[in-house]
Figure 1 (cartoon, one colour):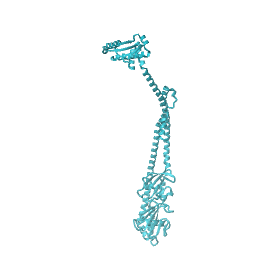
Figure 2: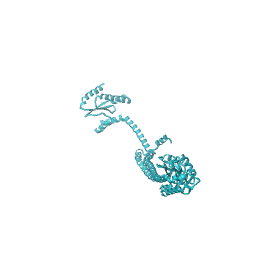
Figure 3: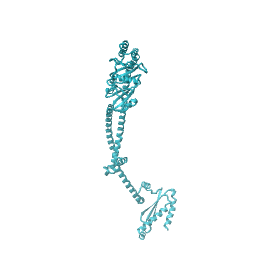
Figure 4: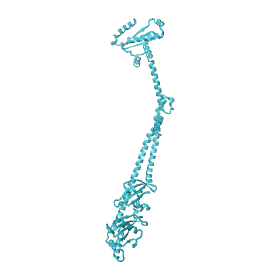
Length: 483
């Protein structure tokens, strides 16, 4: 419906219904508003709490992994700088240089046994195209995956590199590779430290993630170093992945869709090796907590709404009782009217019309009423109190300390009555009365009245200051009488 239609509908609505609707709205809207605000605050608080937990978990994981990788890196540096290892790279692994080979093997095994991190070592000899492994011994002819790893290193690196597990098929190990000698443009060989992924993955497994949370560690080459899910380890993070924006900007927060499930994402970047730690929490776990709190909250809100609804209904009815009483007093027949205010409005309109009609009729009858009052005054039927009241209500100007009554009478009224018709007699008496009123204008207080047919009575009120005017008035009257 359009706005105008709603306004028209509201305008045509009975007052009782309007009162009920307004009472309900004033009662329920604040409750619903408080519920929505509380729900929003609750959801925001849960998200903030989850973010804080993520940061604590990721910081703890980053500290452990960095310590682990620093130990591995320290072992690789010691081996890369060892003179026996350097000497072995120059002479090769052979029976002719047995002592050099034994010294190299002894250094490697001591490094493995002394390290807190258990790893295996492979040493590739660039000059002789052979490889020594602490696990399988000497390999004269390189096979997969070592041949591909060596090709990669020779083409791109002369420093160090970390190769995530599962980068190469059937190589479920983390490889830390370092060129020897250090910082050399033409390395004599490459030192490879093989780390069992289970050693690194245990840091994630031992974290109390709770629920179905996931943690990923992604290196600076967009490769997943380790994850709670083994199938994710070693996979490449593409630019089209929903996780890519969070890897590119660790400060970014939000939700993503993975495998048809919505996750909340938090990230943390390591300053040691530039690895990105990502924590994923299923949105359903967040909504479960918030929904539970929201359910309790809305249950309370619903109870309050029902309470306020009852109060609104009772209050609206109580507020409408005075209107019903007015209808019962003023217009009992409209007691069952749909809109009480309209019924009262109709009654008031009718009353105003009636009042206006009565006032009009009273104005028409006012001269006759005054005449009747003055006649009562002449007959002595009105008290002093009534005289004052009449004076205030109808403007009968008759005031003074003492009074005089003058009677102007038609001589031989019977002859006058026979000589003139009734209409003419009325006009002549009216003219006589007007003439008497004109003659009495100098007097401050005087009224005239037709006491009976053919007779005009003049009542005069006098004070000390107006006493002298009375003889003048009498002269005027006598002069009129002799005309």
